[in-house]
Amino acid sequence: MRTRREVEMKMGHPITISGTFALSERAVVFQGDCLDLLRDIPSESQQLIVTSPPYNVGKEYENRMHLDSYLNQQAQVITECWRVLAKSGSICWQVGNYVEGGAIVPLDTLLYPVFANLGLQMRNRIIWHFEHGLHCSRRFSGRYETIMWFTKTDEYVFDLDPVRVPQKYPGKKYFKGPKAGQYSCNPLGKNPGDVWAIPNVKSNHVEKTEHPCQFPVELVERLVLSMTHENDWVLDPFLGTGTTIVAAIRHGRRGAGAEILPKYVGLARERINGEINGTLKTRPMTRPVYDPVEANNSLTIAPWTPKKVSNQLGLLAEMATE
Ligand SMILES: C[S@@+](CC[C@H](N)C(=O)[O-])C[C@H]1O[C@@H](n2cnc3c(N)ncnc32)[C@H](O)[C@@H]1O
Image 1 (tube, rainbow, N blue to C red):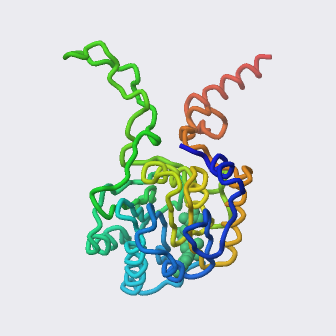
Image 2 (image 1 turned 135 degrees about the horizontal axis):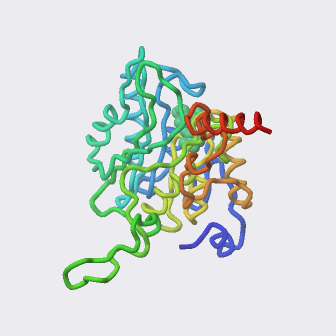
């Protein structure tokens, strides 16, 4: 696999960011409505489409609309995405819940028929689990969203090896049969499964910008590495801060996306340039999720635990006898 820097060296010039789509480009950030960008993209040219659309919950970048109108608008974009998707390509549509009067509507259940009616086939409904978010008082706090992965045909690109994760028991051996005594695990690691624990981009996350809901780069990297080849196009119709293009060019792919708000277009360009220059800070794909219990510090030890109280009492007793 060639990296972004190796691709640059091979091309003999650095990657630049274009404002309009052309197949000869490597990075395209279109300012405006995604349907306008999609109109300029040739049919069957995109290997991977990965996005997180607005959820119609009244964020600053969306006008909350009637659910039917929202679904119609999404269907228009999804249909255009289907047109530009390569025969061997994948669409990964990442969504959470629409909330109305305290009742939740999982958007994937509403959007599934749109994809299915276009003949797309679902390969996984990935649960993306994270730890940070709103604390609910009248329902359990939401700590997952889903990624719906669809392919256009049965002949789709899927390579597990670059995204395998460490085995739990790498020293396990076959205990019977012709391979008895030999190690049973794949030395490259195991299939990551369809429940992904990846920290979301909140407060202290190294990738945090002013955007309220960024993808973590590592989440898109896993999709890019398993569903595309070097030089393929990766498209994000709702680009936000440019995460999808960052992940694409990091691994020698081409990236394109549309963003309607100028301030996020600016952020996307800044982050992509940071990736090109090697200055963008991101959380590495291989870093295990931080376990606060292991940190064992004053923040992670409850002040009301008996051990702590008895330690404090012991200390007071010691002080009293000194
Ligand atoms: C959920 S955010 C995506 C964030 C992105 N995944 C990231 O990592 O930064 C959705 C984005 O879509 C943009 N948007 C909304 N409607 C759009 C449209 N019709 N065309 C292009 N972008 C749009 C919003 O401004 C917002 O930044």
